[in-house]
Image (cartoon, rainbow, N blue to C red):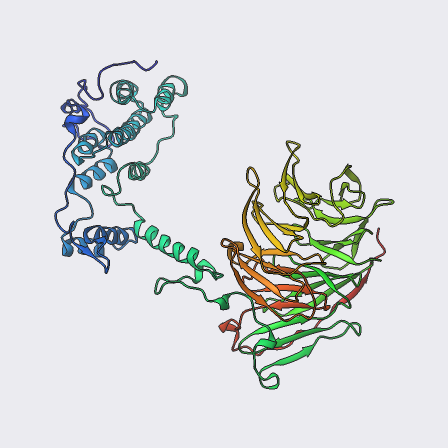
Length: 613
């Protein structure tokens, strides 16, 4: 039972009498009354009764009638029907033209023939809109007829009303197929309220006011204000309608005790943690205005640090051949959880597993060790005879590890140490980073002095980021769409790696001449870039503009690495050659905590010796 081709214009032919009607249709209305072409049926555009020329607001760009209608629509949407009706009456500005109200009611009642007639009386200027809306109405009519086993009438609607519109041919064929293959009632029938929603998306907003138009306008305004805020670093829940949004510089973690100018005995509590050895110390400073931690448990330069994905821990590694896991309590206090001992050379990196239950430590050109976070036990040691690791990372699912080796190969092991793959050749450099994207598709590594390889593991193809200068380190954004690249020439570049790689932004100002300096993303939606520097400062830039926002002094040696908390927008850590880690915060404590008695944290940290497996 196919679709009959007909060359007559849409709606030109006479329709049969719907004497029985269905779904609330008015049996006295004959579709045959619609005997004119679309052009003949087009009424003049609807005109408002009043207020169209009147404007409000200081700039004179807001039409009063539109403003009132949007408010009325919002009142009805919020369930304030009486208030909405009262506004319509008092203002004399109806939410919708009477034709539109009639049309919407007819759709709700399933009076499809009448709704088609009223649709043309509304006076839409674009015939495409009329056809699209007519198709939607007639499609619903067809499906409801089919649902009630009125096969002949459904076929008539398809042949004589839907097909002559000459649009959406694919859908017309699907409807025809439903008559002969699926059987009656098999096609899903949308609710009439859903049809109204679809009509709203088809028809001009001036005809049917969108239900959430006011909310959309307000959200757009807030987003514009947020995007224009250079220092924006607050959650959306902190935005308010009562005043224009503007973050101050104080929203960036930037405060240290030395900058406070507050008398230490009067305002601060300084407490050393319980010692598990003479050199394990946590200094904690509190005041009504700010807080900072200076972690002093490493005995030599601190080279690397990283927050866990859940923000509950911070891990650090050092030239002193150890790594430390720091625990962050719910109130923000920090304590030493485990000191991981077992490497015979400096630990260049410590990396969290995807579920934060384990960490990897990379001994410089030595071995890789895997540790349990809860117990602090060493679970396995990964090594290969005659060569050592330069860098390491986790599989995206946490079920394996990857490593860049001293012989310029990339090796992959399962958790039990079985070698799964090993790529030979000039794959990695002496100073190198390696990472896998969260979906496990891309393996990212420094493959030459000035080249980063983006290797598609599924398609086994490679794309390259080619820099002009030597690459010293890189980091991936949380969404895996960008790579932050540190260069030998004291420049950091942000690359987009969607499609063909391209430079997005450049960051300058920090100092680097001899050491490996690392940078990171951070803040609200990772809207900032932070980096260490050889001049003992931390540098922070606005990610989009590349503008240097602030420089944070405090360390007494080169700052090698920074890490921004993924769960606390206002907390950042930095690691330095001075042997300390600084935790940077705002210039005040959260007001809800100001009433609490502040106490220093104590540590029950335990030394863990690893002999490997």
